[in-house]
Structure formats: C-alpha cells, structure tokens
Length: 445
Image (tube, rainbow, N blue to C red; front, side, top):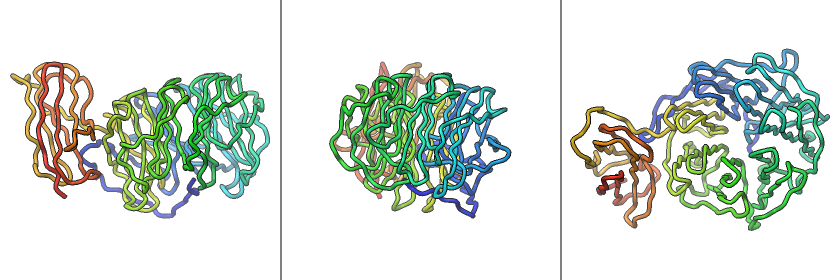
C-alpha cells in the first residue's frame, strides 16, 4: 500500500491518446490531491472520492467536476488506495467514510450518508475508532464498514441492516483485508493491511452469511501484494495487485487461477479494476520502471487483453487508483495528483468511417506495414451482425481482441498499438457469421 502523496505542483497533461484508446483527460479541481474511488450512477452522473476528505461530482459526463464538502466544520481525509471509501447504490443514496486528522495521526472515523443525490449529507453515529477505511452497501439496508485505530493494530468489522442507522459488531475475519459483497449474504475477503506495503498469503476467504463466519476455500500460500477485488456476480470475480498478479474465479471463489496472459511483468502494479460482467472488464496498472500507466481491457473474460493508454503522463507520482463503468461504453478513471479521464466507448476505438453499404465483405491490408508501434486496419461489412477482429502471434496465440461486438453495415477502421509486444510477424483475423479472412502484418522495433 503506497502512502498518500500530496503534491504541490499542478501538472497539465497533453492529450496524447494512443491508437487503441479514446480516454479523454478532464479538468480536476483537486489537481494537487490524490483521487480514489470513482463511481458512475448513470451514463452522465458520477462521483469521485478524494484524499482531502471531499468529493467531486459531475452530472455531465465529467465536462465539469464540482467539489462537495461533507461537513462544513471539520476537515477529513480518506484513503485513495484501496478505493473503498465510497459507495452509491443508485443516483440518490450513497455512503462515504472518512477520518479526522491525517494518515499518520487519525483521531476519529466518520460516516456520511445522502438520500437525495448529494444535496445533503448526514453524519451517522458509528462506533468510536480512529480510522475508517471501508464501506459497502448492496442495497438500501445492508452494508458493512471497517474501522481501525491510528496504528492499524486494532480493527473492527461492522454490519448494518437499516441503512447505517445502527451498526452491529460481527466476527472480525481471521486476517485483515478488504471485503467485497455481491449481495446481503455472499462476500469475499482479499488479504491486505491498509497503510502497509507488505505481502500476505494469497488465501482468499468467503462468507455466505453476511460476514458472521468465514471459510478459506482456496489458497496456495504464495506471498503476494493484492490491492483490488471485484465480482460481477456470485460466480465471476477478479483480484489484482503488484508484480503483475491477476487472479480469476468462475465458481464463486472455490478455485482461483493466476492469469498469466495480460502482458504484465513483475514491474507492474495494479490499484484499480472493474468488471461489468463475466466477459467485460478493465484493470488499471502502471509500469513502475517506465512510469507508463495503462488500462487492460477484455471483452472475452480474459482470453485476450487490449492495452489502452490513457493520457495520464509518465512521472513517478502518476497512477490509476479508481476505475468504473456504468455500462460497456461509459466510464471513467481517477488517480494520483488529481488525474481524471473519461470515455464514451469503453476506451476501445473502432471507428465507422462510412455508412454506405459495401457490396461485399473485405479486410484490407494494415497500414503502415511494417509498422512501429501502431498500425491501422480497415474492414467492410455489407450486413449488420456480430463482428470479431483478433490479433494472433506467429505461434497462433491470441494476443489482442480489437473488436468483439455487434456492428451495423459500413466501413470501419481500428488501430492496434504494438507498444507492449515484441517484434515479429502477427496475423489479424476478421470473423463474422458469413465471412472469415486473415492477413499478415509485421511489427518492427
């Protein structure tokens, strides 16, 4: 867990969007502040939690973000990593957990709630602890909260069944960690100690009774540093962390598999991720050697990944702390030093350059070819339907999915960025219900 960093310099980033992404940099009123969790409650309305204790709110897809102060009298702070200090269940109702003081000198946890879309915030009565770092509700009534003393040596885990009005202490999990609940009964615990940079065992715990008891159905005793956990349903879940570690389950955590095809190496650290469903998800990661931040995108459950490069900048304090999508197209990310980016097409760019109906299917030769690092691929669709455009290496392994969606008739083009791939021969294959074509291209670095 990295310490919170407060920088005194506001950095303006050039809008240098790589070929396979359409993330747009947005203005942040908190340019000198680390931003944590981002959550969209509609395609246009979203919230961001900031380490200065305040929130940012947009109702126009991030064209403007407005500061929101929770308490007119006291100053608070919050963790930006992990991004678990805010939760909305709809556009009206949300909770935010904060602490008085600073990361090394917390002296009072506080929980706030709104039921009118953030117009008013009510400070709820909670057990007395120095530090509050986690809150999650799955509906208007059922939620959980984690509290600690200022040195992270004493922890409390609590559940509410009436929207946060009352809290009951429940059994503290056998290890310190970040829970994630998919409903009022089922949840999982990712082992990690907030405020610590140490590794833990990879044992993932599970509860089926709302946190009253926990089991440990899986673990290999590998020492890992985990930072994000997300489930899209009771079966499909993802965990990620440092050293390029990504874990996936498809049976509710009975088994987890290490995902090794993302293209990450041990120099990558992940602090953000969100999965919309079993197939579609985004992971925010950073190469700590080159300082390049990327978003890994999959639309086939991790069979292949597309690397997106949002306009974040390559300096040591950059990085992605939060990522969230309202649907497959509309979403955003937040990060260190006030970074905010937004996309309206999932971050993946496939452009319809002509709506005229082609006479036949065709897949054009990529241009330029040979190329370094990016190339353009164009194709024609005389019929609407499901379209998939995939890149394979010379051994026939799928390395990137550029398109995997329903498209209308027309002519399209998409770019492939080979920055994270080695030189060599690659093949790209267009597949529809009526047409399959493969062509060769050469990446030369």
